[in-house]
Image (cartoon, rainbow, N blue to C red; front, side, top):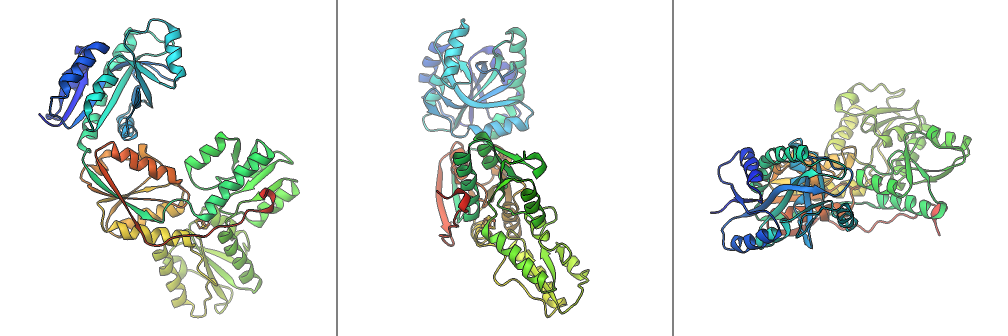
Length: 492
Ligand code: SF4
């Protein structure tokens, strides 16, 4: 036999899992209740032929946030890491289940005392069972997973909880089948460069140093960079993210984000006596300076960019009466400059190089005297990451782009791939990956936007390795050595 082998300790667990299965090539094996039965069953499993092993059953919850019927996907069972856990968890969430990701501990007796559970919770485990550790030891290098539906959690009864858990096992079964269908050996092709740019590294370091030197809270106007992980980490360390300055108490420290602010925001901060640390990327500041220069020379300035983006709002604020936002070639046709011989254009730093050059060409065509920026406004990091992902897109079945949905440069990377004819998906982390994207993909491209941490890429590769052997290579189109200095407020 090959295919997916599901180990369910109890007859009733096996029955509910079988009821949920939708394909005919999975086997559900009742492995028996308790630690000793699991140990002896694991011996037999080593002689069986199968491709993937999943333990499914009910389990005891160890943390207070869990409810009967919630599902725990093990990231670790005892000392054994489960690398593909995040991918299976994402699929189970898509199936409508409430999923907790974390370590599962296997014990050799029924826990009757609360103190025993409390002691296990102290170790960091979030669920307990009596079979998983011996059973997964039989996987012997094959993809494996552990799914435990919570039957009893701290403060809940067992009987109703047991029914809720069994129903969840039935709902989980098709997701487990999809996980098994996505298992295969793969190549992962990394785009280089990818992930953090110099402006993002600088902005994060500014907040970290402000927290160290000034203590908490340090206020940050808007997201310091457009990335959920980065913002969440800094918030956990005491940074308070606000939308506007009226949410910052008088006299407090406030950091302006990497995307920059308009002069009106600067004056408001000065009027309020706020202690400002400016994390605006120097390459955004350069565009602001160009806007001021053109406006003071009586030019009408067309800013090529996306409405509503914080960088665009900040740049437009430098000379509101002289600047016009241009988002499309149609917008170029509608431009009515004060003087057709005095028109200039600038660009948001994180645009698609292809699209922006199309609009610049339209401006040159309509206004032969139009002046552009002194040097490219689309920054080196945006340009390099787009070139790098273009280089891998043609050779891969699908490209995963690590980055948040509000990250302009990350969204542009997806568009670059799509223009090259390759499917691409933007994901905050591995748990956003839909297994159906991977089912037919044996070569996966992977990159990350300039605001996405390198650790996310490492985690995604680790998660993919939970679906089978992964060989990783990198295609480097250029190397980067740019660093920006820190503002005086946070220099040692
Ligand atoms: S993407 Fe470019 S402009 Fe934005 S922070 Fe990074 S280097 Fe600066």
